[in-house]
Length: 273
Image 1 (tube, rainbow, N blue to C red):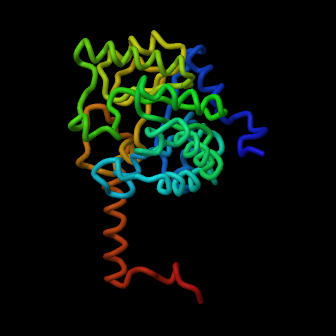
Image 2 (cartoon, one colour):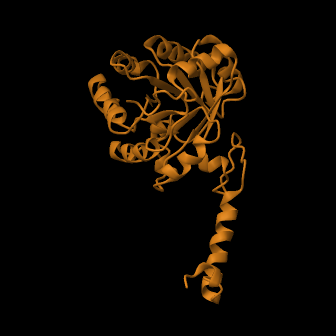
Image 3 (cartoon, one colour):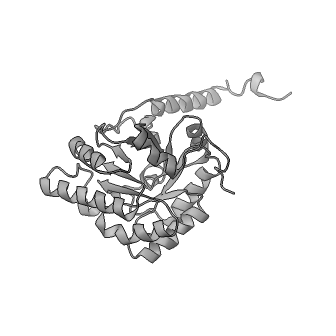
């Protein structure tokens, strides 16, 4: 029995697709552990992405290319154990799907069976049509990802806006249509000009979810630690910080440290008689 069985308030691939036709905007955040998943579950967020951005956020890597299937399984298991209402999507990491459709099916199957994912996300365009078709035919929902595709950071030469030139725009639109035809149920657009994102959104019947792609997309996604303000020095144009928890956490830790050293904590209130 699925963890969502009988829970009318929970999201599914079907409810996500219906949102576009009903004119309802979608919210999506990354999440990598159970403690945050419990909080997200109470928020009304539509989709949780166990993103391979955990390579940067959790593991301290410079990019996502070093993230493995075992890493993704570890974190998706943690989130899936407690998440109930949002749709749970899990990134397929670098080189877990590019080699062949059969490899993609094997690894996506692991994320569903072992990791508790309800769908998977792949980065890439027309070159991945065979993989997408293979997964969809096997009953595994797929979310696409175009624009800045972080797994190709070594090819792209850095984190920069994609699709400013006319030829790039045509390619991205063609990729989006090909992915929709192949069966993806939604599409992430990362770091693309707002008007290009609008064109793609208006062209497709599936929802688009933007990050650094303007307000015309059908939904928006941010990294949880980014929107909560964990890193005071991280200030990209597309990011809105809804809290400044980095400073609050640092201050709390400093107070704990000082109270321990001053003999203030633990007091009688925090001791057993």
